[in-house]
Length: 316
Image (cartoon, helix red, strand yellow):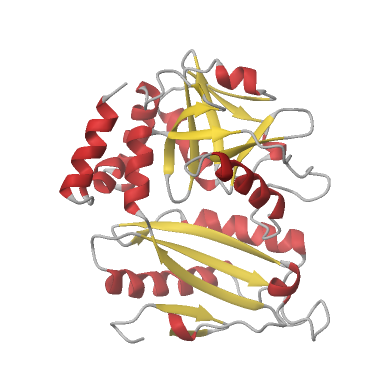
């Protein structure tokens, strides 16, 4: 691989990013018929790759797509690509890596050869810094979560039109907001376009019933850290009433790791700023990955932008 150019992996070949292409006849393009996974780096090192590979291959089994690769082979290709692209990007930037596996061409039978793609993208550290210090607003959209009986939400399947519509609906009201999607019974589930959700009441973490949510690696890691810290976790069916009356709330995903929620539907959650439980958990995250997650994102901002953001975070 050219040491000065970002690359991607397409069907067994590492190619310059600009040359990475997929056929217009691919089922992913025609039908959204593919599964995927996403990881991120900390100082150029991937976090939790094995867990992501396990979930990806559960998705492949569920969707009956044979990648013609083992988890170890796909993981090795991902590691090699990330190591190269991290060197090209430089030490101050982190990446997300994504594996996309499709059922292949519409010109073949359903069991035809798959398309296997791996690519990376740079993290927007400025957006992360703002979220970490100020929190993110959530809004509940009219679009509901697709029932688990129709399509499992527990793995990353590309058919996410309902979540995209939920996100677009909310973004029209507030471009900085995420959508906290409800199920048909009015229970909170997950955040669109792709984050886990949890909230705190009286020092206890409450997690929405996971039959309707992604088996999130970031959520799972957060709950592992909570267990190490002796924090109780309860899972159940919760409505917006429960969230409105929470002390704190967070989202979890691969890019953010864990991020505070400032308000839901315009109603402030707790103080509306990162609270003590968030600070405990993000500190535990930082210690586990060997990077000050919040400090790194804030420290990479231009001086003026950083000072303005820190001033905004100090206001109530």
